[in-house]
Length: 188
Image 1 (cartoon, helix red, strand yellow):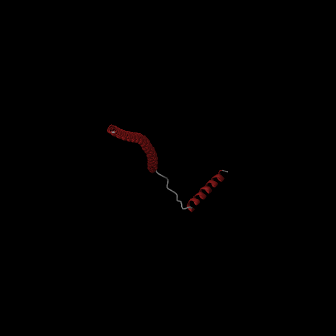
Image 2: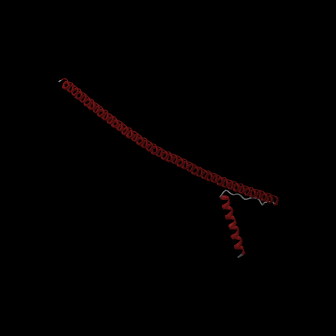
Image 3: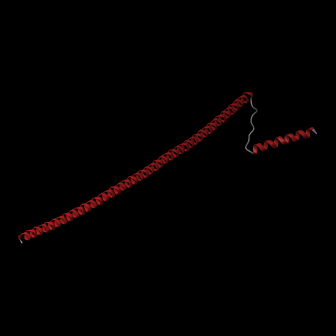
C-alpha cells in the first residue's frame, strides 16, 4: 500500500514537472539563505517604494482637490462680488433715477407756481388797467358834462345878455319916443 502511495506521488511530481516544462518554465536551484535575504530586502524596498508612491499620489490627489476647492471658492467669491456690485449699481441707478424724477417734479411744480403767479399778476394788471380806463372814461364824461354845462350856461348867459340888450334897446326906444312925444306936445 505504501508502495502505491509512493508511486502515485512520483507520478504526480513527474506530471507536474512536465507541465511546468511544457509551459516554458524551468526549475530553479535550491536557494541559498543569503539570496533569500537579498530578495526579501528587495521586496521590502519595492513595498516601501509602492507605499511612497501611494502616499505621493494621495498627496497629489488631495492637493488637486484642495486646488479645485480653492478654485470653486474663488469662482463663488467672484460671483458673489459681481452680484454685490450689480446690486450696488442697481441701487445707485435707482437713487439717481429717483433724484432725477424728484428734480423734474420740483421743476414742474415751480413752473406751475410761476405760471399761476404770472397769470394772477396779469389779471391784476388787467383789472388795474380796466379800473384806470373806467376812471378815465368817467373823468372824460364828467369833463364833457362840465363842458356841456358850461356851454349851456354860456348860451344861457348870452341869451340873457341878448334879452337884456333887446329890453334895454326897447326901453331906450320907448323912452326916446316918449321924449319925442313930450316935445311935440309942448310945441303944440
